Image (cartoon, rainbow over all chains, first blue to last red; front, side):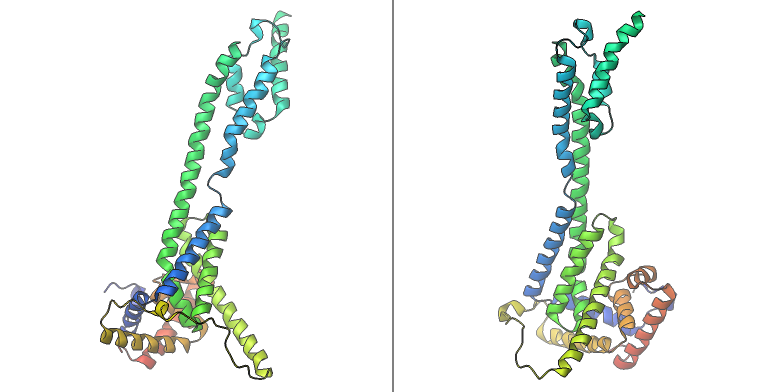
Length: 127
Length: 208
């Protein structure tokens, strides 16, 4: 028998006790087994309820859509910059898309500032 | 407008990245639930037997195991699965001690009250109590009797010795895990366990 009790060795009473315990597990009645299964399912439900499976990420697509709408409103409205040259480039959009946090992407003021910076750039280059 | 053409293309990598991350998080959470299911399925019967020996009462043992499972999921469900075993038995041990304490208080109160006839236990369906008949009747009877003697001997041990013996011997926890579950030093675990074995050997014989 494998000695699981360190260097003290194992007496007959220890081995017999474990053997009886293991055997007794097989004789647990159906009602108790059923109650234990129900208890386990309740605990798993608790884990699912407490830690939803990535529920916060369900908002990510909605956030992206909101970003797209805000970007359209700011960059796409007539009069901002004016002319074809004011249309945002892929680099501009990547600056938005690569932002790390959803909070930042949802910040309307950030897009307004980005648009303003872009509009000021050509003037600065001209001067 | 160029914008309408470029916007979906620009957002696509971001959406794909979010989808991948959401899937990874979802899978990881699902793995955690499955791991907890496996863990609880592995310990539920053992925990019930341990609580039953400590308390001598089926319903109390079931309630305590159920509560320990819920507490583990609620408080430690996100912890690595390697941590669950000592944590689960620590919760179980605490619940057993709470129950024993409540009983002592109740017994003191009941001693002051007039005797009460009747029981609040629900009647049990006799068919539900039928055990698994895998073993032959004579062998099963002998095993039942031996287990009853062991349970009686364990019930007579001091609580800490009983706990150390059941965690080490029945559950196979090592000294460090048992110490963590019992919130005591490893030296105390060894002492409690050694005394428990000594007493059991005296009462039951080396092999009974």
